Image 1: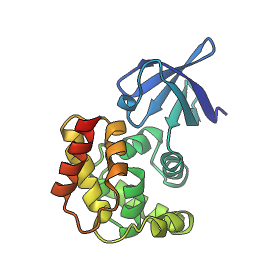
Image 2 (image 1 turned 180 degrees about the vertical axis):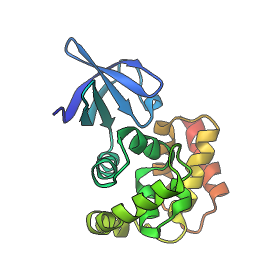
Image 3 (image 1 turned 90 degrees about the horizontal axis):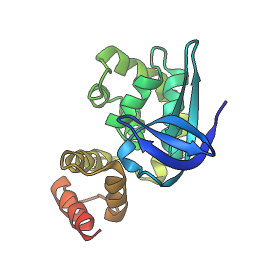
Image 4 (image 1 turned 60 degrees about the vertical axis):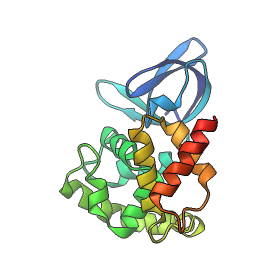
Length: 197
């Protein structure tokens, strides 16, 4: 199994990047190809899918994205690697964890290919895993109340303005705690940060 790839981005595709390792180029499906620049050195934690007719690699910069992806593929019947990746493209991993805790069907059905039955299955199957595996994350980040929802709104607003996931993630880190601040205020602050870059 290929568990990690470290190399240079050779090409960026619609849903993947080709990472050059020595003289071999690996096509790796990623959450957001716009995060990567051609020529950039990268290290990706990879999930290797072996099928009868082909092999596929899914790569993640963030460990949390990898963990949530693996949980979806390995613990939820009917959810394959492509569906899991589509879900992470629509819903950030931390928000997905919170959605499972809240049992929020609506958030999951916003992702392409996720109907109500699939969403309900995901919530049921992942709930014990989230409660056990991500309890520290939920409490450490104070993921309660409206903060995750507000940050998700900010992320969606910035995406609609054409910013890449890398730019959005960087600006969200600069914002600090979202408590007592509206989505509009946070978007304004994020845009100020992005304009300075």
